[in-house]
Amino acid sequence: MEFFPKDIEVGLDNIDRHILRALLGDARTPYTDIAKELKVSPGTIHVRVKKMEKAGIIKGASLALDYEILGYGLIAFVGIYLNRSSATMQVIHALEGIPEVTVAHVATGRFSIFTKIRCRDARHAKEVIFSISDIEGVQNTETMIALEECVNSSKGLLRSIIGE
Image 1 (cartoon, one colour):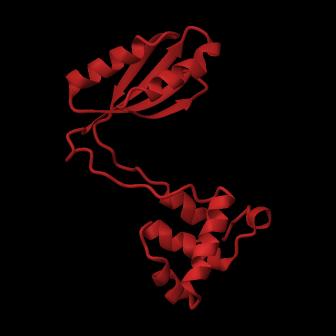
Image 2 (cartoon, one colour):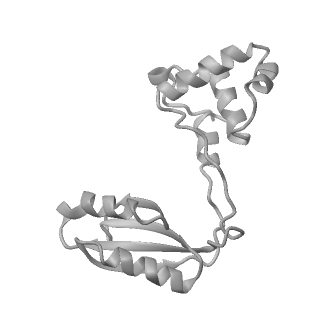
């Protein structure tokens, strides 16, 4: 079953979907290669990509790194309890200044903010967690250490959205 609820809203057609599939496979795929597959000009691909960027569908390309090789193989998730909800943006801004904090979400449920950190080892993680705890407005933290990252991809979701 092909499900693409935003067809009407953003006006994506089969060419746009093919471009997204190609870039999903490898974001560095040259426009000329995509154009050859579709039998259109590279300029057409460029215009279509720019259209999808302007619509906010494509928000750039990302670089996949092996943090283990780079010495930052320890992943931890830090749930943050706040003293008051009005401190949320202040704490988020402070988290942006901690390089090891790679993801932060404002959340519902147990934590006000949920973060992902990458560190060299347990000692380094302790330092980062203590620096998060020292942020004004943070009441307490709770940490979970990841043993292994098994899935880190939104490719399946995008394939489902574009009807692959």
